[in-house]
Length: 561
RNA sequence: UGUCUGAUGGUGUAAUGGUAGCACAACAGAUUUUGGUUCUGUUUGUCCAGGUUCGAAUCCUGGUCAGACAACCA
Image (cartoon, rainbow, N blue to C red; front, side):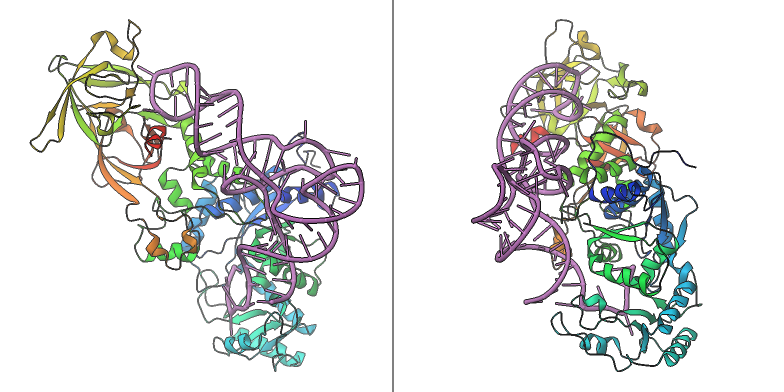
């Protein structure tokens, strides 16, 4: 007996249309427990679109105290590989979901599926067809014009049985025969015009090896796989909507006892400035436009992970975008909001300068240095404090100084006093330039009374800037990623390669405070006033490598435009 | 062209015949040792035309627009 409530009892809550169906089924007792599944084909890496589906399926099970399986839909051996099987598991787990011991493969069901195909043939509901793919295509008709029957449609049951068995035994070459369902050649739904159930594919399968040379099609495998796993709600994307009658036809034709799974469709995720099609992502990888599936510019889960996105931020994103049947294009800014929201709570703040200009504090004694107290995370007191070394020469961000500042510029400028975070107030006295007129040094004076950043006389400064001591600074490599595509909807473009943004990756040498010596791969940092960064997995040079996850919200530069 | 599906602010998503709500974005203000965060406020919406009704985003009729499908892919 399980006494846990199946339906959460909050008074006011927003549920989506799938949850509504689930709650209805639970309420009427159609199901005691719901059971969903996440069924990727292992032919590529998972991306943010899959994350939506994962959060939906696993999230549904979690919310209603049910179960969710992981199932590999591996019915097409030519596209699939164990590399993908492994990465998919890793990504689902990383997202924070567990299938416990319920990991299945459609290929586990090949024998049962075969037996069911034999049942269909025996009932006269399927036949072996000798037509080629091209011939079938030519005879399929149009939505208005019915298909012309295959000459093999009325083949006898015994002959079909014999032929199908010989297909299985490998007597025929690829493409010479198929097993087709006998349904309705005049159906306005093209899926019902005698769809192919089995095709001959003399190809090695990543799990079943050479055991099979005929493989079931998606339509013949999916519903029955759901059935075998006792799936109650089979949630998939909108393009399978027209397949639903077929999904139900097979369950009915094989006469599988109730209860049967129910297919429910939702609109897939589209993200602005992002391509999501597996085919195009594969091309980006194969043709070297990116450095692998986990390139931080990729919308893959492993790419996002390496970019610094957290599982929490992705789950939250999935929650925020909702679930509906209407086509949608979500703006990437929502995704960025989600990761900022999460990282703001977690990331350790450090001082780092990416585009340095040297500041000399002329009245600070030469050779003197001191350590100042800095707060690790103002949003999280338990993160503690650290010491930051200070000396006569420091780097500041080049953008934090302007010789002739426009109105509304708060940072350092001739005669202007600003605060060095956690250190002192400094005032710009003069600027040193090279012969070409480039600023090479800024000379400032500091006020010793403002140590720590507070002025005893309560005088205000307009801004606080970040800095790092030249002598103590650590060099690091910083990778600044921008969007990979220039246009808002690169998915529309005929040639997406033309739409690539060549400036999507910029590598710079930055300087950070000594604290990051201890930085470990996959740790998140906020470079104050710059953005969120993650320590990249490996670095050959010994220098720490940071990937920028996302810049801080920047209202100043927005005002400039 | 045929079938199916959908249409609510800039973008998403609620409201199932009864005050069009929420989030992001935008804008304004307050706080701030990050031009960040946080807080407060403001602007912006029911595809169109009819109909039913005291009352319609919601129900009906007609239209418009958008997407999916016509692989031996999933």
